[in-house]
Image (cartoon, each protein chain N blue to C red):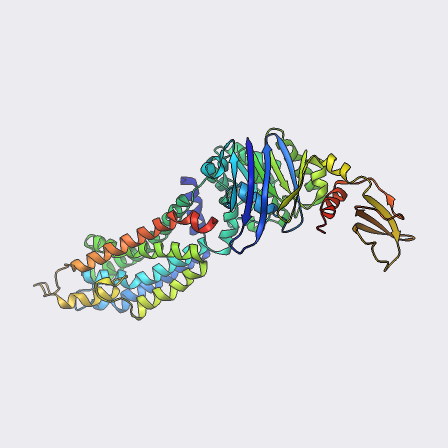
Length: 244
Length: 286
């Protein structure tokens, strides 16, 4: 399956949509850095873990929209016409879904490699700060559940009807930019990390210590399990829904 | 390989009855032509054979075991060319075949090169699929069906979009492949079936009207095919079905099939096309 994954990845990396959205993500990330993060989030330093988590949270909606747009291609008309041929091969639906999820993961990883690199350049150039290592684990906790949840829901929606993925796009946009679920259950975290530090005591260095709410961790776990569950439900119910 | 279709009925969720109590067997080697008008149930039969549909009633056995329980084994030995399909336009011909070979579990460049040679696509192997003509795309479809020497080849209108020379070339390739395999060919081009198939199925309205050799089908139509010269605007005699009309110096030469030919018609030697139309006509279906 490595070869199939390789070709699927090649198709992604050479697609105009991916390259265009990568540019959009980069420009948007730079805008967030230079207009919001530069001032520090919730009265913390711009290079605090809180600010870096807010940076990731604020860029997540656009990157998730990118992933959903690419995912929509997997359920679109052209793909369905190719599937007439591929469905007559021994590859199982489960393998297909897992390969697609892996390709979407690479797409997401590349976007965050660029966004992360941009953040590193920003911190180094503007503040001479190089301690990025502390940002990685909180960022992963923020990103991975969000990615898996939306991809899982996207797979289910796309299999029912391709247009349902397009319905998810404004939902993500509204939840990310207008205001969706607040507090610990904020899927992206941009809102949570902008307000939660305000409730914590300030340490001698001027910033609150980076201690996340256990409810936030629970919420991340729920999103992670729900996304993974959606992927497996999609696989398990495939035959019944499509060939009856 | 042996496929037994036992009393299959297929009713779609919309309520459309596509096949009714079909029982038929296929055994290798065999080159079977499937004839029938649009909506007869040919494509449904093919989708059932590739495990793309679950029958409403009945069972399909592959070498004596239920086909659905051997889906992976079936697909590992299957070459399938549907009537309508898509390709990845961004890949080259070679890359697409390499991709399909990986999906089929076919290893080795030689199979890809062989399929390219057989379909005369060697010169286009580095061309992106988006730059191919309709006929070349069809040839890519045929090439992917031939990958890996499959034991069961199912071809639904394979020669659509090909020029006459290519059509003849491909039907000969299919014929060669049928020496030790099962090849099912669904087509509207009766001439292709006549040229290469050892067995023909006539499907109409979800029923098999005929299953046997083309020569027997043709002999069944003897005395039921005739020609006569008609004048413009002259109505067709009742009970006759016109096969073809050709303008000649003294009017229009009509070729007809009928259970009982009119007295003025001159009996003609039937072709497979005449026989096919007579087969449908005599059942009172057209």
